[in-house]
Amino acid sequence: MDKILSASDVYDRMMSCPHYSGAVAIVLRFEVYYRMQFLSYLINGISLGSVYALIALGYTMVYGIAKMLNFAHGDVIMIGSYVVFFTFGSFGWNPAVAIILSMIVCTVLGVLVERVAYRPLREAPSLAVLITAIGVSYLLQQVAQLLWTSNPKSFPSVVANSSIFKPLQLFNGQLTISAETIVTILACIVIMVALLYFINHTPAGHAMQAVSEDRGAAQLMGVNVNATISLTFAIGSALAAVAGALLCSSYPTLQPTTGAMPGIKAFVAAVFGGIGSIPGAFLGGVLLGVIENLSKAYISTQLSDAIVFLVLIVVLLVKPTGLLGKKVNVKV
Amino acid sequence: MALLEVSNLGIAFGGLQAVAQLDLKIEKGHLYGLIGPNGAGKTTVFNMLTGVYTPTEGNIVLDGKDITGKSPDLISKAGVARTFQNIRLFNDMSVLDNVKVALHNQIRYSMWTGILRLPAYREKEHEMDREALRLLKIFDLDKEASLKASQLPYGKQRKLEIARALATNPKLLLLDEPAAGMNPNETAELMNTVRSVRDQFGIAILLIEHDMNFVMGICEEITVLDYGRVIAHGDGKSIRNNPKVIAAYLGGD
Image 1 (tube, each protein chain N blue to C red):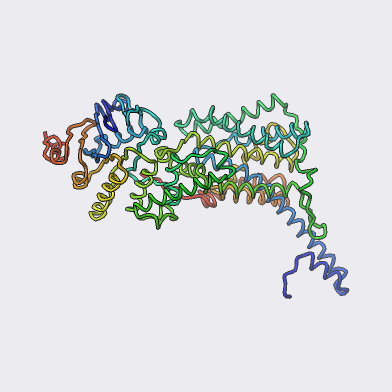
Image 2 (image 1 turned 120 degrees about the vertical axis):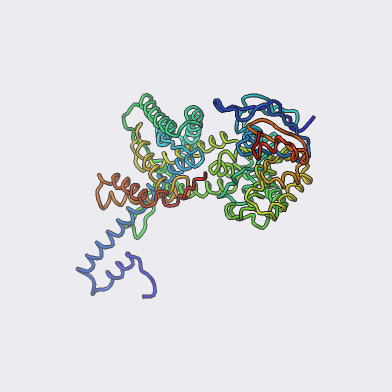
């Protein structure tokens, strides 16, 4: 055979050959069916993983630059999703406008939280900051519950009636990729490329790298550390808004605790990939999404979360710095 | 009026008076040495001059402007730059980017020019690259511009630190043990570099150094600290023969 045939090609050829019809064809049809199913799980996993990656970017950038874990990050996603829910879902705004407004709201919220809750603790022990972050997380959840009650809201997909993004049919319709999946994966790739460009090729990006490596030295070279940290929170929160809209479009239940679980999973993804590393957050997020989806499909729906966290434990045991994390040398 | 005027500067950490009653006057274009035995408070003085520590008493006036207790980034903008005793480069960034970080103070453009990548932004970016390369060339580092800072050999890392400090366009450059860990040849070369930096940039340089040949060789004025207090002040010759200085270094009564 001179070229590699896809499963559906093989199936079509077999069916057109009289000797192979019958039992073999039935076996092959199952074979193709399972292969398509696997592909579908895989692609959905990548899509879910892309959302984790977007959220993980927020965790990893804030950790890299401010050296703290912002456990309220997941709840920023939830607030962003509510903004999209009301503007797009209830008032019927254009989805792009709704998402941009949500990004603005989340940016302001992220910067505000940093200014009010974290900046006064800049010199405090890291445990104090960590506990404050958990406090902010509960605060945001409870405020959301007061404002919008704990009743789950049914989130409308932001790409459902889109004229640009349509579901993609592959292999004669045996494999359907939803518009949400396509948009999620595309958005993640575009954001990732833009972010890497920003970090590596702009003055503000250089300042971020400098602060991340040595805050004191950066400040002595004239970098405004507080402004740089605010910018980091702004970018992370804006990405969280995008992640929220995409997540709720695929998993359409919105309630005040919606952000908590994806937030923790994204944190796992960031640690998995190597916290502080931007490509690491991307890799960790996608891998985690795939692992979660495949274990839901082939092992157990109830155990999938446990498996995700098990992966974290194993990774930390084998490679404590995460997949792409750097070894930290402590200088005396 | 001198470029830097420090009067009655002091700092206490709890009950420990690390530096007290320090007076310092540095003229424009001067090479000035700060020496003293280990633990005398030299680096503490640097940390106060650059805003890392807030002095508990006294004033620091740079070029007529009071900079006492300002934050390090503002003091950097006011015109004080420094290098570190233990090299503190941004190791994961390229040699060029290390310098560019420090250049950002002088070259400004609005956020929107940056985001929209307007021609003004590209022009500024080119300007920055040119300026950074010019500085690297002075230190013979232009060929290594794309390497990571951590890939440079030790001596070149020291030079890069000086180049990076100069990129902030300082009026006063503080060098914290620039010759530490260098062999006699490298030290001799560094002496020439420091001198030529002073001549080319016309800035004042204050340096801490334990290598007495280095200090005596290039500094026009020297202040000696011991236990946080000035015990002597003058040119190299008078310092060398000062009995208090000899006692501080060698012990005695």
